[in-house]
Amino acid sequence: MPGVNNLIVLVVEDDDFQRLTLVQMLRVLGVQEVLEAGDGQQALALLSSLSPLISVVICDLEMPNMDGMELLRHAGQAHNPASVIISSSKDQSLLDSVGVMARAYGINLLGVIKKPATLKNLGSLLDRHVPLKRKDVNALKFTLSEVLQGVSDKQFEPFFQPKLDSKTEKLLGAEVLARWYHPEHGLVYPYAFIPQLEKDDHIIGLTMLLLEKAAAACRTWRERGLDLTVSVNISLASLNDTSIANQITDVVRLAGLDPRHMILEITETMIMQEVGPALENLARLRMRGFGLSVDDYGTGYSGLQQLMRVPFTELKIDQGFVTDCSTNAASRTVVESSIAMARRLGLKTVAEGVEGQAEWDILKAAGCDMVQGYFIAKPMDNLMFLNFWTANNANGNGNSNGK
Ligand code: G
Ligand code: G
Ligand code: MN
Image (cartoon, rainbow, N blue to C red; front, side):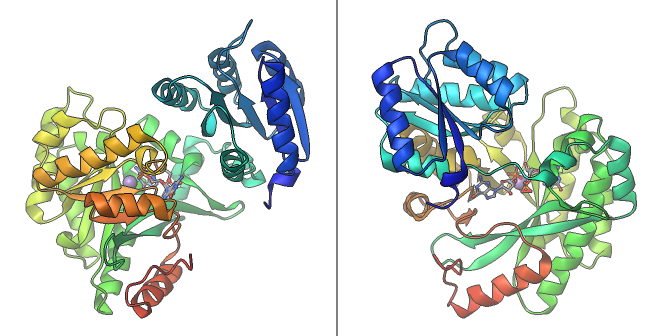
């Protein structure tokens, strides 16, 4: 198991026998160093004195003094960089709820283990740990004005993540994800600039830049005879301005793409009030031929009411449900019923966050139209994307990830 042997793991568990069992399993898995704590307070003390050395915390929920929930709250609020695995004998629905809580507190949650842990599930969750890179730390320092300068210097580029037909495995299109080619820091990922832009409605400049570049890329694909669509993320806040549909249409047409080959993924939701302008823009965009997709379906506010009143053409099931649908019965239920509902509403379905064959099989059986996720391919630049198309095409549309 590569990677595991340079981890430092903290086990937080009040039951001596269970703690010892976990420690031994971690040794068998080859973990370099294992630390132990009997409750949340001891764990917090170790975390604050040894951060950032501790890579992963395995955390029980029910403990004396400070329980697991409180520990996760403090760790999240302190921006502790350790990843977390929750391990407990409680009901799956309770574990899932605490999982959502942990993420809401900013914890990088690797997963939840229903006791007793096995070498297999422990090993596969540890494998998900990605060490914080130097780049990631630097990236957090960008100010709004630095990001806006980068936008006005057009330093942002679209990366493309493939969307495949879930049955034939044919490449159908790609979702655009923004990347910043920073003159000093190199490739910078969205979490380092999207939050600043979204905070005070500054995202539209980046959106326009990406729409232009994505439309131009898709036009060149289509000129080569590749029948592909391109999907671009639009923050709902951008739709408050009633002139935005026209601006979007103009930039896409000027780049030489017919709007019917572009899908706009609407993230976040109508947190009421400005429903009028948003619906006016969406109706106008749909009339011009753009596809409209509900992004991150199943989370936050992307609810049923919204589905009913927006002329959507596609529903994207949030990766939070897709990634574990083969191991978590509740996620599988959400995935399968969302697909069934979308069908009856006449919407195409896309599952995002497909990380394995087992999930893909479930999605296919449930009638999901398209799949997207690391198992198929990560987001990539235009040149790599064209290579991906070539490989996909040569395989008779086979899955070209080599797995
Ligand atoms: O791959 P990824 O790490 O690229 O994206 C992280 C997050 O940033 C995702 O939630 C994605 O929706 C968001 N994001 C990426 N590109 C854009 C963009 O162009 N516009 C908006 N609004 N969000 C984006
Ligand atoms: O918010 P939105 O759904 O637009 O963004 C998609 C996000 O999901 C991007 O950050 C993208 O990099 C990420 N992503 C895509 N496929 C996978 C996957 O298989 N697993 C995980 N964990 N993330 C993924
Ligand atoms: Mn999206």
